[in-house]
Length: 265
Image (cartoon, rainbow, N blue to C red; front, side, top):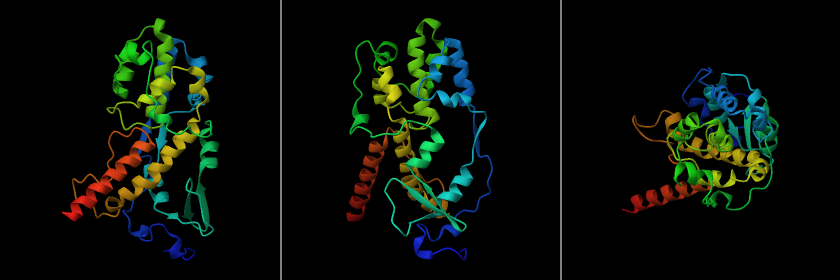
């Protein structure tokens, strides 16, 4: 353990014994290039730039994700000696302490921050003339189906295409839904029908809360695996059908109840 470290502050005191890794690019994303291609097809580039995610069209690809670097930072989480808020994390990096909170996320993402309305993700009601009913017959599509549908649409359907591209961005670029084959969260289809409300929604706060949940909860679920203690073929840390933070928290409670019942038996 480094000389400057204070043992009682480490969230995970045994972090130095975790699986050793080297920092590399891990994975790459080319979603922006694909997004631009579809936007150009429908003549929506300028309109998309005026929306909540327009600034991301300026990103240069491929986007590199340094998963192993993130892993090494996470396992150095500390408990700040002066106390900390629930919506932030602190890390011990050499002689410095680094914070990850709403302010840092806002600076990095440039997204709207604000108060999330209580139960916002439970609103999945859509009108009869909504895109979800007209194109998908009221059934929530997966990201694969959504993108495949986009590729077959004509220029006359540009208004619906714009809505679908914004939903795809939230679901897949920011990773608020679990993978390509999980149904996209229903409340997105309700919100996207009102362009102004969709634009002004506090996306930064929503995506930050989702990100923070995964950094905290999923890390702890995967600890046995990261420490090399998990059995081969296990499902440690695997979450399915992730819709929103509220759903994930409910799943955690259900898992804890099941474990308690097994122990009683």
